[in-house]
Amino acid sequence: MKIQSFPVFRSPNRRPPALLITRNFPPMVGGMERLNQHIFLELSRAFHMGLVGPRGAHSTLKRTRQVWECPAVIPLPKFLFCVSIKGIQSALQLRARIILAGSGLTAPIAYIAGKIVGARVLVYLHGLDVEVRHPIYRWLWRPFFRRFDLVIVNSKFTKRLAENAGVSPQRIVIIHPGVSMPKLEQSTEKRWEFRQRHKLGDNPVMLYVGRITPRKGLASFSRDILPRVLKQIPSAKLVVIGDAPSLALIRRDDELRLVKHILISNSLGKSVLFLGNVGDNELDAAYFAADVLIFPVQHHSYDNEGFGMVAIEAAAHGLPTVAFAAGGVPDAVRDGISGRLIPTGHNQVFADAVLEVLSQREDNRWHMSCRKFAEEFSWAAFGHKLRRVCLEILSE
Image (cartoon, rainbow, N blue to C red):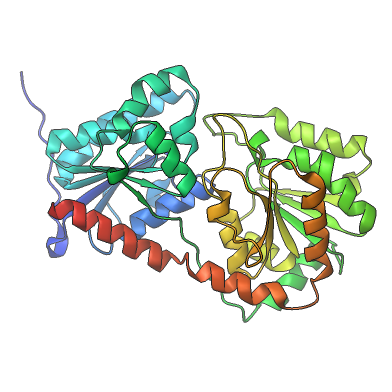
């Protein structure tokens, strides 16, 4: 039988070749996508990188030729089959010495490709990709986590999930996702332009950012908390950035309809502005324009928030967050410093905390402490930790 041979990419400057295999990468939108993009960029400082990712990824990495694309669509088996073929092909072409799975979904593929080429294998776990209840996933996917040379997790909560899945604590390292610190020179201008553009005036503004799914808690907030806030501050507005997750593996298309039904039923529709998915510039302006980020994440069995990147992004803009202390959120919000952490289910306490922050919007109390907290999560710090653990595992 004739064996197909592949061209080999020579590593420039003798940097060790490495490969990232992931479904979550721009142009797809979301926190995991931004995280994986920064994983690639930060590792590129020490490694000759290749990427197996979703269609369109190459356009976001214009200087990188070693990109293998697959259609990131449902049905999922089509994507997994494509990634399996291209994962092995790319590992052979690069002669990869490090292979990193961007989430649990691509872990088996990264592991197998790594064993074929003799590479060290790592996986970054986010939370849901550990605890998801799907029986086939739990039977076939999760056992691979125990075999990796290193398991990187995004929070203490996800670390506990990984340990419960059988991963040795000695093979787990926590590296929190990072954040870009925005420049403040035009923050006031951006704030008022956003408010004028969306006719918000000088009203107190609450901001929600994220996919609209049950665990994010927007429906619960709209039903149980928002009416209490508006009773005290009728002029307050809620701006919602995000949409139903059309490409998520666990889809909840009815959640957005539920939220809008709750608002209409309680005559609150005029107090809420839905912007859908927006670009980075508009999101940046929204963080500056708002007075508080609401993050009412819920505890859901087998579906919890692994970290909470939006809370770190808000803090980087000087915006405090009021959040329930569910899942890995306590790693992303420091109570009294970058916002308020509320015990899950305490809706009145959550409403009181939102009212407290809105009442302080004219002073600078939160701005400086939020920014100082966010600096601990810079992408530079993230990249330094990531490169260090990868180089250490390579030298073992």
